[in-house]
Amino acid sequence: MSLRRMLPLILIVLGATLGFILLRDRIGFDVLRDNRLALLAYRDAHPVLAPALFVLAYALFVAFSLPGAIWFTLAGGFLFGVFPGVIYNVAAATLGALAIFLAVRTGLGAGLKARIDASDGTVRRLIDGIHANEVPVLLSMRLIPVVPFFIANLIPGFLGIATPRFLWTTALGIVPGGLVYTWVGAGLGAVFERGAAPDLGIIFEPYVLGPILGLAALSLLPVVLKGWRR
Figure 1 (cartoon, rainbow, N blue to C red):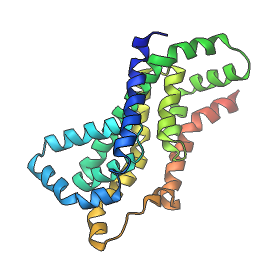
Figure 2: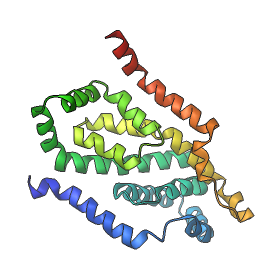
Figure 3: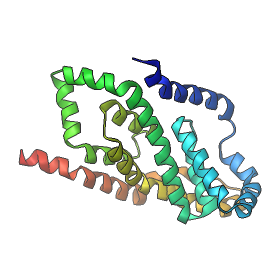
Figure 4: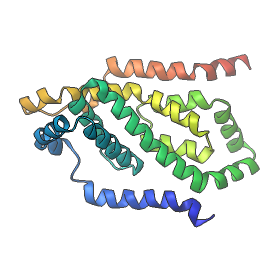
């Protein structure tokens, strides 16, 4: 395994370690609340540069898998509203996920795929089943809130999923959750005025979680029908 192939993955690991050390106390509700006026002023003064820098910062945060990315989603709603805030949030998260995916696939995917191809038994049947139903599986991983975003980026890289397929299923699959939290972020102004904190557990409320799980079940319907026909 060449160092050149492993270099992107090494850089992400180093960046994640450095970012965790330097930024672990600099991202959160208090930071957003205390700097809200400065952020709004910068947004108003730089209507083009502000969204570009926001998307870049959010994408890097996701690429390095740093904790607290949800605060970027809330900030996107707070600064830019539900629309175009959700577009910026989805674009940034997708770009960050793509960076992890490509780093893993380049550094580890080829070797792991060769081992899988040479294997047999249960693991091979499981992997073949995933490849036979790539789109439903990828969409369901994004739609089900209990699957960590970081894990949903790693698995496709390990399995050698095609980049275009990973890209569009990621972008589409994170829209429902991204829209919910962007909406929460758009209401942060009123939350700041009350001196309260946002309800980050809203995505687990039945009226929110139910439709998202329904979409996840719908995405898996082709797998169920295929198994039933067999």
